[in-house]
Amino acid sequence: MADSLLEPYLENLPKDCVKIDDQTTDPYDFEQYWILNGVKQTMWCGPISVCYALSLSVTELRTEWEFKNPSLWKRIKGGGRFSGTTSQDLMQICDIFGQKSVKLETALFDEYLKRSRYTPAKLQELADNGFPIVSVKIDGVTGRIRGQGVPHWIVVESVKPERFGGQVLFYNPASNRIEEASWNEFITSAVQPYGVYIPMV
Image 1 (cartoon, rainbow, N blue to C red):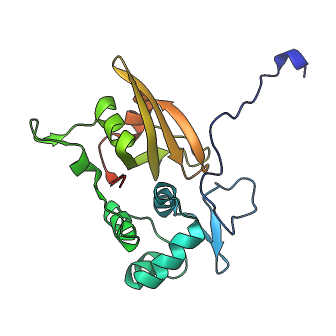
Image 2 (image 1 turned 90 degrees about the vertical axis):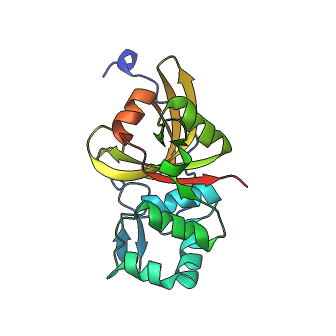
């Protein structure tokens, strides 16, 4: 291949944002995959999102979680492979660390409209003052957000409104790094507000 056809590959956004011990060694696995008692754990995007928001490693979170809320730990761990987590599950994990959290729908609720307002400006306000953990869909192969795909948790880092949309920076557990998308890409993937909001103290 001619050198003139090669495009530069740049990585300007933060990566390896959460310390994930015992990651799998398969280069085709998502970064969020790790091994517990010989079993590959693939459904940890929710707990890892909480790790990101609370500046915890996976080991720190799982140690406290198993000790302080064993019933929740056993229910989600099941027979050895963790199942997915709901917003209520993530709020219970926050409770373990004494961290206040509310449902995303509640944090976005507008008293005048009497419903949640999922707009760039409103989500920017939340991201400026805390950590919105948001349900989206991702491509099961690439891990990139898309309109249809696998349910997944991400953490919105910032929103820059621009005209009728804008830009969204978010932490993606699948790649364990900060990624970016247009507002239209984001809202097509998220569709409606579902998740958890962790306000800064």
